[in-house]
Amino acid sequence: MEFDDKAPIYVQIMDLIKQRIASGELKVGEQLPSVRDLAEQLVVNPNTVQKAYLGLEREGYVATPRGMGTFVTGDRDVADRLRERLARSAVESCVATLRSLGYSPDEIAALAAEAAREVQP
Amino acid sequence: MSELVEVVHLTKRYLTNAALSDVSFQLPEGHIMGLLGPNGSGKTTLMKILGGLLYPTSGSVFIDGVQPGIQTKARVSFLPDVNQLNRWMSVGEAGDFFHDFYADFEPQRFEDLLKVMGLTPEQKIGALSKGMIEKARLSLVFARKARLYILDEPFGGLDPLARRQILDALVADFRPDASMIVSTQMVGEVERFFDDVVFLGSGSIVLSGEAEDLRAQRSASIEEIYREVYGHVETRQV
Image 1 (cartoon, rainbow over the protein chains, first blue to last red):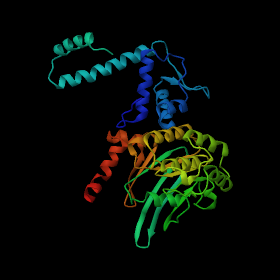
Image 2: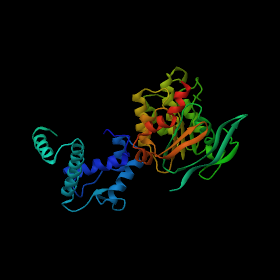
Image 3: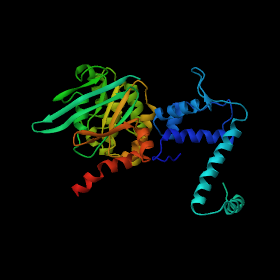
Image 4: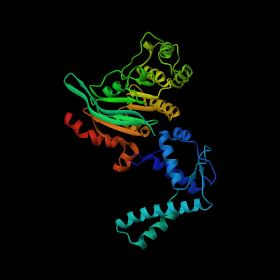
């Protein structure tokens, strides 16, 4: 994975895992890789992965039952809620950019409708 | 979290000029610290003092609560900036030498590391390329189960692929009860491994902190901060 070194790496690892939860790739109850394995995979300092896991735990996305590893936690709707939140923040930042370029809400809606048909993931 | 290394008001003077003046920092157990700065900023002097090869003029240094000496040398694995191996020795003999010298040297780990690096014990040091000598030295240093690893420019003679191999080995070997201090000019390539960074300039700390905090505060990579911190110095030299 490519990181942007201008932003804290643990935040980017948190975002990566949240995305996986939102998309359903990681399901509630599923175990995350061990800190060491993920650190090796991403070629980062294990402390950074640890920090990301702690952050996710604080935000309630994962739990760490004593010595068992780290698991995705929450109710069935966690993925939906997360998906909605990520979508909302992506749209908000995009709309803010367009507003600052002088587009009206109607024009933005029209552009969005067009882009939704044309842009591939 | 306990501090493994404590440097308190450390000053080192060579005859007239000060190589280090009033340097203080702490390094917690399990952390990797990047020691950054241009040539002549005092990195090597600081590392030699931590390694017990030089004595401070004033101030003090503690490793695990003990001042550098015979006791700490047994727990500190030091990679100096120049090759310390005898050219007539084979790689395996260098391993035996380390094994005799350091109680924490693990021959099996040494063999494993050599394999990863693509070296064999029979090869003579004198017949190795610069990059291969670097790999042999790193294998020796990492084969010790030390508390503190001090690596002075460990990526000097290495190509990008070999650097990556060593970084991988470094992550795979990470132990929460050990710490590491690394000086390097390859800031961009290595910065993801740093928990903490200390920027030295003319023997003093010009900036220090946790790498992630510095990135967040300045919305910049450690490499960019490096250029920001030393940029004016370099342009003045040119």
